[in-house]
Image (cartoon, one colour):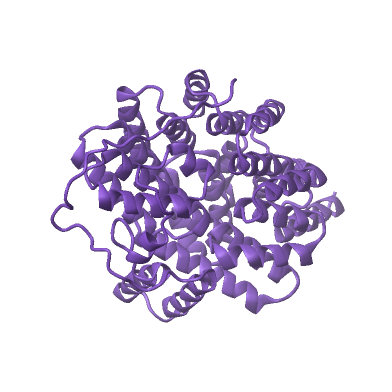
Length: 489
């Protein structure tokens, strides 16, 4: 594996007058603060609890506007253009989108496509940048803007690999992995060395549960475009197959080859997550500290640090850190984690508020074309409507048969009182060798409910041995169940 070479996204350079219907650079309301986005989610959650059906759908549309202050047109608003970096008049390279300041890149690209609206490469880069930005600001309404930008690129240059690769990334972000695979394959037919398409192809195969094919795709990508994005995916494929040692080695090599602060933050966080999953909290915290030294605002590192703090016994520190995360990016994962920490300390009102915000976010994401069934199943099984959890888990399983959807379906069935039916799915979730304490906890609880006490003791012991602080509520339940099994022997 060698360091990644640069892959610039070049535009045509052709200038033209704006096409009919192009968005004007008129002033629109200032984009909301992080606190404003969370407040919008809170208002929507309250409305959602009072009504359903068409009313809820209309609320989701209003929430999307509130989250973005009305900046829903392709190319953004006039303020974005005004804030663009002076002198930037060309498409931003793909590496800037990955390593640099995405907000600056998006503003620069918005200015560029106004000046050169026939630059298909710039439209493709803008679409991809909007997809990437959702990972940090949690605003799924950006996906509509990304979709329009990529469609504009393809209208200008049909079949261009940059836009096709962007469509693959967009489909993957929306959890439409069959479409992501199709778009990635089409992009690779035109450009076999497209890093974006190679990575999206791995992601799609992983999320469709086609792990052997994903491993082959990772090997091909490593041969064609070795670099941080490929290395991290290669490592994850190995981890899914139970080869943690290789995953760790590859991530360390990726960190050694990281070319800038964003890459360092990304890979160090991946290492932190790997080590936290193995119960090595001090090592995980060291990696998160390195990530935050490179980028002190990198939310995945802050979330990882909070989870490691909680697992290591620093619940107060974990709550403080997670409050910072959800204030800036109210996504389901950190919201549920924060809710469970509140619940663990006895603050049920605050916990319920976090779980309601998860419902609000999933409604907004669904309105933006995102498949949220897996998120819904995982949150609702423990903190919501078990019937809805089961519906969502079945829907997710029907579309993609992965270890994660198997675990979600198993747990939803168990929570619905159907533990015997859940057991085959719990076993399937742990069949690849992937070692996840939450999966083992779920399997152990299902085995216990199904009357398989010996197997339950083994699964629960393995969960707590692997990662004793995997969840403040889950670990406590696992210990209590194991104590009960031991007492009954």
